[in-house]
Amino acid sequence: MANTPSIQHPNELTAGDFTEADEPLRLFATWFDEAKRSEPSDASAMTLATVDDDGLPNARMVLLKGFDERGFVFYTNIDSAKGRELERHPKAALVFHWKSLNRQVRLRGTVEPVDPGEADAYFATRARLAQIGAWASKQSAPLESRMAFEKALALTMAKYAVGTVPRPPNWSGYRVVPLVIEFWHDRPYRLHDRIEFRRAAANEPWSKTRLYP
Ligand SMILES: Cc1cc2nc3c(=O)[nH]c(=O)nc-3n(C[C@H](O)[C@H](O)[C@H](O)COP(=O)(O)O)c2cc1C
Image 1 (cartoon, rainbow, N blue to C red):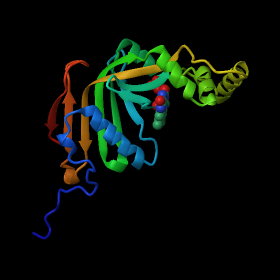
Image 2: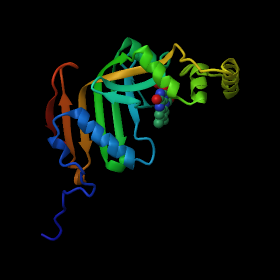
Image 3: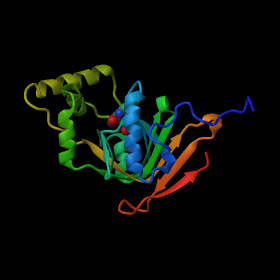
Image 4: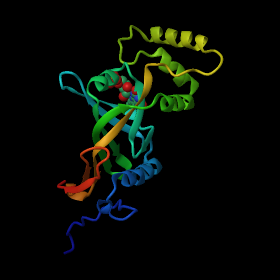
């Protein structure tokens, strides 16, 4: 029939059918590499969702700074809203949306702080002004004026005029240890492909389920 719509996606997968994958980390690594090549902006940007004491969800963007079999790492001020929420409820969800690939990855799991040495090593790689900013910003606390922040920055710059800037004690990383990872790929007419990997604990094997779109 001439006008039968094709369900073949124009943006076909390069590495075969992703729903055949049996290990989520390798699949994430493949998709992330492709996103780094195709996203016009930062492919490592992800939504981090936490909950507060009332069970009210809170979500914001953060940057993925590393991932391996232990989990997915981001850095922040631990006195921020997200830091306080994670202190009391160490569970989170992450969402990546790579528009250039029509793909989404969702993760849910427990959260643990990274080792101080790991945070020190990452902090040392940051631009000096970003290091200064980490000291000067009381992230998520009320700020009376931009001028007050500029003043705090200037004072911090004077304090660390020479030598290396140490990592502030309230600035560190968290590792999201996924128990659920879902891969979603857009298909025409909303006939999307979804596969979900689940495990009962970090040391348990993954099981895979295909989901209705
Ligand atoms: C693309 C993008 C990336 C961001 N990355 C980070 C990050 O890695 N760490 C961070 O603390 N805030 C980051 N932010 C700012 C957060 O979204 C948020 O405004 C801030 O962390 C305060 O959140 P909270 O009050 O919920 O703790 C980023 C914002 C955007 C838009």
